[in-house]
Image (cartoon, rainbow, N blue to C red):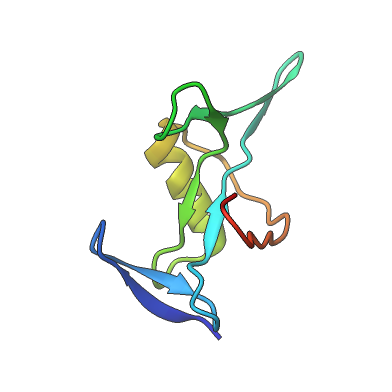
Length: 94
């Protein structure tokens, strides 16, 4: 069961799981031309780090919609579709 959570930083309601962890998505965006290309962005904490765009899921938003929104918000990319790949649980930021 998922519940709402108020993100004080952005004043948006986010989806959290039964343990209180904010549900997040990551946008693994690829482009196929002669070679497959993967979209990466620089990290806010360090411009020397490259990361996959992603973020929290807004209340009343599907994970697929959140992926498309995050790709646009963070990289300015409009994606055609989203495919669900799975869930990853992060135990520690270290």
